[in-house]
Image 1 (cartoon, rainbow, N blue to C red):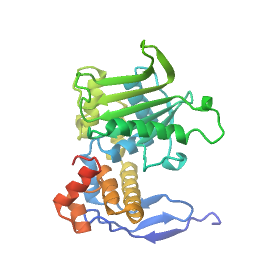
Image 2: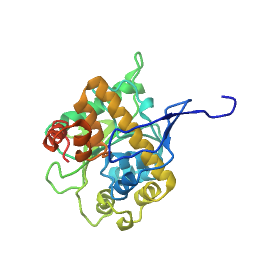
Image 3: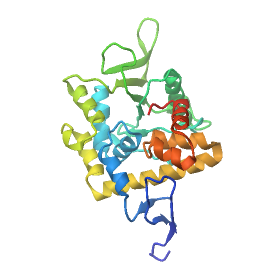
Image 4: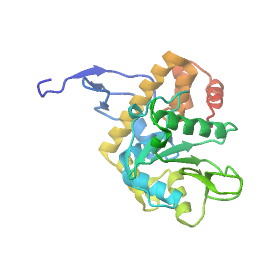
Length: 297
């Protein structure tokens, strides 16, 4: 392009509560940005907690420090995240598996963070599917199984799944005598609602907290502040919203209206009222679609 960047102007008007200025699309890729972030979007961002998939994904992708802190506190070992993969870098994930944040450690291992805002009865099988999809994605045809990297699965769940009052439930593969048979894999199921006075309790408070000023000082607060309180953060949130909208529309064309609505609801990009107006549905119909998608709104 002779050193000059050319742009095509496109417009999105998917959700009425998100009035958009002109949106630019780079000819050289799929990076979106807007000239102006809507006031409605900024107000929703202001009161959004890390329990929202949208804010959680952005914070994990923008801050290796926050991702490392979260993983270290949960696993009890020092974790250094060197990068968070984009969806384009993750291949062969079937059954519409979209990992919230898949991060690479400095030692070559991987950690998958999943924000789970409900405890539906199929969660165990969903966990199993996600973890299997990771192995499929990272073992090319013809490669030896020994080439699979170590894998840590972290599920942040809105509730105490096993009802024993713990902040974290850790699982590893063991034999009948309790001996660990595979140290390259571990799973941590985290109770977001845990309210202890320890490091985990303070971190879980920060994840639930909607107001930046009320968060405890730690790397999560620092990263949230970068998104909520800076122009660059606002743009990142706006860009993410645009991509989710576009993805929802594309998925709707491919797999149906309900799947598109599920994507938008899961990522906290629009309210049930917005969706009802946009699709000509009643609120009860929107809630039913959310329920069928395993979401609680």
